[in-house]
Amino acid sequence: MELERHDYDVVVVGAGGAGLRAAIEAHESGARTAVVCKSLLGKAHTVMAEGGIAAAMANLYPEDNWRVHFRDTMRGGKMLNHWRMAQLHAQEAPDRVRELEDWGALFDRTPDGLISQRDFGGHRYARLAHVGDRTGLELIRTLQQRTVALGIDVYMECTVTRLLTDDDGVTGAFGYWRESGRFLAWRAPSVVLATGGIGKSYKVTSNSWEYTGDGHSLALQAGATLVNMEFVQFHPTGMVWPPSVRGILVTESVRGDGGILKNSAGNRFMFDYIPDFFRKETAETQDEADRWYEDKKNNRRPPELLPRDEVARAINSEVKAGRGTPHGGVFLDIASRRSAEYIRKRLPSMYHQFRELAEVDITAEAMEVGPTCHYVMGGVEVDPDSEAARVPGLFAAGEVAGGMHGSNRLGGNSLSDLLVFGRRAGAAAAAHALGHRDRAELPEDALADAARAALAPFDREGGENPYTVQHDLQQTMHDLVGIIRNATEMEQALERIAVLRERVANLSVEGHRQYNPGWHLALDLPHMLVVGECIARAALERQESRGGHTRDDFPATDAGWARTNLVCSLAADGSVALTRQPLPVMPAELAEIFEESP
Image (cartoon, rainbow, N blue to C red; front, side, top):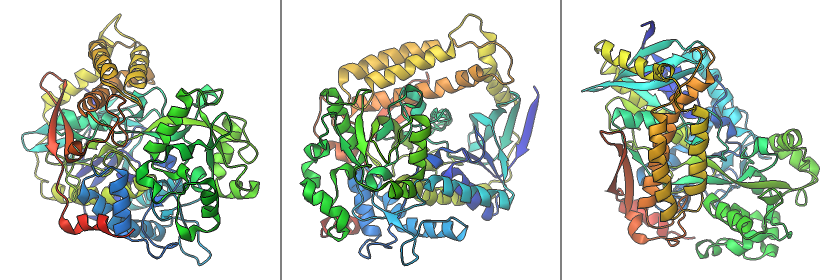
C-alpha cells in the first residue's frame, strides 16, 4: 500500500477558529503540530458567525461582568450546561478577544476608542465584540495569519477517515488527499478534534458541505462518548428564496441592529410569543420596544432578540398557521427601521448577499427568512478544564464538543467558545503529547484495515448511489427529527435509519480515486448516519421540551430532566447505545449568582 507517513506531537483535525486556536497554543507550548482540514485554509465555517464574539468586556455597559454572562449562558441553555464550562467561558472570553486584537484583529470601535459591542438575543447587555457583520471572517483571518507566521504545517483538502488507537489511547490518524485519493497517516499521541457540526444530515441548513458530523462519529468509533445530541439549534433566520440559496444564514445582527419580524399580514408577531419567563425583562408593547432603541439604558429587549429557540418556534408556528410568506417563511424588515446608509455600514455582507443571491435590496424591502439547521449543542463529552475526551490523547473543542451550551446556544457564544476552549485543548494536548513522545510505530494491520474500508465502495458493483442515500437521510431528519418532534415520528425515523444503515453498507461508486466527489460522499455518509441516529434516539428518550428540543407530545419543560444528561456511545454492532447520566452539581457560590438582582 502506498502510504504517506508523518510524525507529530499534536494533530488538529479542523481549521476553523477552534482548530487554529488549538494549533497555535499547542505549537507555542513546544509541541510539533499539524492542522488537517477537508477544505482550504480560510474557508472554515467560523466565517459564517457574523454577528460578533460574546465577551463581558463592559465597554458599553460598565455593570456587565462575567457573572452576568455566566447567568445568561446558563439560562439560555435552560440550566443543562456544564456549569464549569460556562464559568470558564464567561471568565476567559474578554482576554481571548483582547488577545485577538493584539494579534491584529480590527474591531469596530466606540466613540471612546474601545472595542464596540452590540446586542444579541439572550444577552442582558450589549456584549458582542464585532467587525461589521463579518466578525468570523476577521477572526479566521487573524488566526490563519498567525498560524502561517508560526510555521505550523497545514494539510489542506485532506480528510481524516479514522482515528488510530491502542490500549493506551490515541496513536494517530489515517486519511486521504481529496485531490488524488492517496492515503496518508499521522503518528501522534494527541489528536484535537475541531471538525464543527452536523448540518448536512438535514435538508435545510446554513452549514456547507464539510459539516457531515465526521468528528462526532470518529470520536464514537475511537471509544469516546457524545452528550446532549438531542439539542439541535435551528437558527431563526435563514434565506428561503430562491431555492438555490435556501438555508444560507441571515445574521442575528439584522435583528440586533433593529430588524423586526412580520407575518404576511404585516403584523409584528413576536409580541404574541414572549414566554412568561422573559416578560419581566422584555418590552411588552411595541412603544416600549421602540423606546428601547432610543434609550438603551433601560435595558429592555425587543422580542426579536429572545433566544434563538424561542424565535425559531414562533416563526415555525406562524408559517404553519398560514401566515407565512409566499415562499414559506416570514418577513425580516430593517428597511423601515434604519436608514439605507446605516444598513450598508453596519450590515455590508447582508446587503451584498441579498443583492447578489436574491435580487433583494434590504435597504428598501423586507427579506424572506425561515428556520434553518444551524448548530448542534451536543458533541464529544470532554473534561471542562482540558477538553480531554474519555480516550487518552483525544481532545475536542468548538462545535464538535458538547456541554458548554446546554440545550441552547446564545448567539455570539460560539466564537468565544472556540477561542476559550480551543486554547485550553491545545495546551492540554501538547502537555499530554510531551509526556508520551516515546511511542510505537503505527500497526500495519490497522493501516491496512483503514485503507480497505476507504476503498470498499469501489469494490462493489450495482450498489446504492451515495447521492440517493444522502437525499433520503436528509429528508428523514428534516421531516421526522426537525424543529418540532413527537414519539411517533421519531420512531419512524429510527426505522428508516435502520434501513439506511443497510444501504450505506452497500454503497458503490464508479471511476477512480482522483477528483471523485461520489467517493468522498460515500465516506462521509456513515458519519452522517450515526449522528442522525444519536439525535433521534436522544430526542425520543428525552420526554420534555427544552431549548433546541421541542416535542409537541411533551410540550412542557420537566424539572426532573433538568438534572439529567443523555450520553451516546457506540455498541459492538455499530448501533448507538444511550445512557442517562446525572448533571454535574453546581457549587453554591455559583448557584448564588441566579439569586442576584435583577
